[in-house]
Length: 210
Image 1: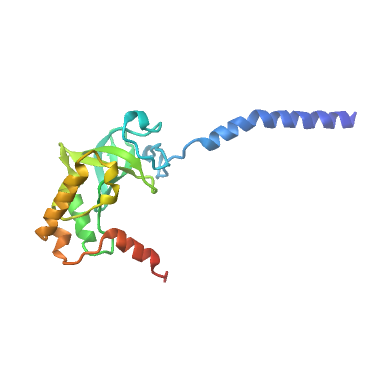
Image 2: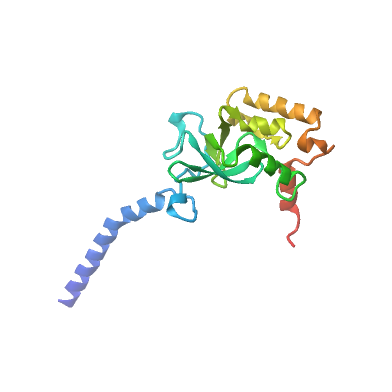
């Protein structure tokens, strides 16, 4: 009798495991929430960094457009926006690369972006998320291209390696804006030999840790 009961218990355990396995797998496959301090500060976004050019190509949960007020400027090309629902987004401006913190003109670049957008209502048109799960996209205020203004003020570099992700013709427009600022020695171009931020980052990674 005891052996029979034991066999029945084993059978029931196996059946329950089979019933709950699909649910466990489903939960583990769900995309993670971007970690913030509370539920209102979370946004569900894709994590694969896939470039999305059309609504049909957008992963589920990927916003076509984000509008809100800029709460904080992190550096010359990154800021935090809060939309009307209280959701916070970390936004990386597409098409440009700002000097890093600790790099020459890094503080000035941040200051210029802060003057342009902090506490202002902006519109972001995302194209993808990057490896840091930031929304990457174009940024506008009242129809003005903030990326273009940053280039014209010599606050950032044109990040030409990602021109393929920009709307047609915009990369050329940014290239001209940078060349004009460089020729007039505006902003970071007042330095006769400025270091591109991507080279600065490479050197930081290569330098031995202290």
